[in-house]
Length: 533
Image: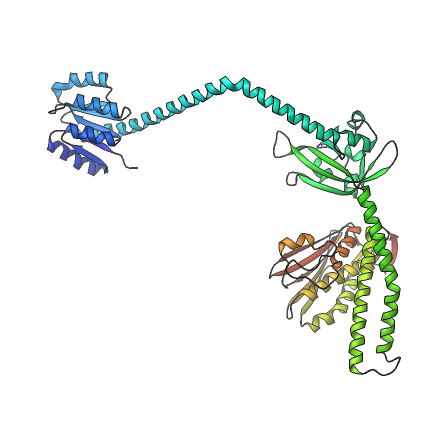
């Protein structure tokens, strides 16, 4: 930053010497005056970092000039140049006016420059000090005003808090949903009246229990976590502070009724904001919704079941016609009957898919787990689908990272359904000339299956909906399928306590995978049934 220096001396030779010296030392913002009155007028419009003045000058001597300059810029450092005879007057001026330094003529350039640098630094320090003092004065004034109004503010805030607390208490006490507050270990700390009525116990009794003792689910990881930390119990932890638990039940201790509920947990951060110390849960009775869903699903199941018989009859009849059971058919008749047959078979596929979904969701489907060679199952599915790949000129490869005699414990038919569905989707959504790779491996007792394609890919916004019911393609492009294939695959894998997921990038392709844990068997035996899950 440029430093402004003002120098006043009635002798032009002195100001010329200043100009040369300052130029050598790198100072460019220099203002030289031979008339002190002109310098005063300049200072009225400009604030320098340092002022240098001669002592003996006509019209206005150095003391008079610096006195005027001091009035205009009290923080700016000022240096007085004097002869030896004026030394006493210079010292007196320092005391009376408050000058920074006096320097006797002739001066030493190095000494002069050192004093100039120190004087400029002093000017800045005094200015900073003045600013700080001003800020402190303002702050002191504000503090005084705040102190004078503090009692009033406290009274107003107390009234606001009291009103807010009364409103919150009213919401909690009269809320139809149960509300519970628990600590990180699941110990109940507070409940509202609706929760007391739902559980059939008083708040005093409930506060001696863990939340896992009054709620349960078919998810075994929740029921087995009574002594675990909050992250394991509620699935929250540092990265996820909210969660919605579905398909849970609370037990009424008085009536013994098991009420289906949805529980929304939200973490409350404590003193250490990086960890959640408490959780507030809202327990909502969903009995009516569950009954409505059951009636709807029963209606769909009954309707679709009753549709199977006429559909099968129509399909069989059309096949008889196409096989020439009623005589020879011309080409137009064959095309028409073939179209009708395909439409009926598609409709039957939809009916069967709806029935399978209903059976899984209603818990009426029992897995028939057997120990079987998984490589044979994959190769069988691969062989059935390979003609479709050849028809579209697709590169369809399979790769195993396991021994030939690896056996797994699972429902062979349902796992084949998942494998066929994932591979079939890849074949449908990969463009002609594309490539699909099937990967299967056994690792540490787990079985992992993946299907990788280089198709159009799936937008990130659509991925969360892929495994939901009736999800067809993406928001940009819908498929002509039922929208139940991936949903049913998820139901099957989760029924095996496994996990299914997808990774995809638009215009790059997709990778669908599923994982079955602890299913690899060491038994080198033929396929046999070992349990009914």
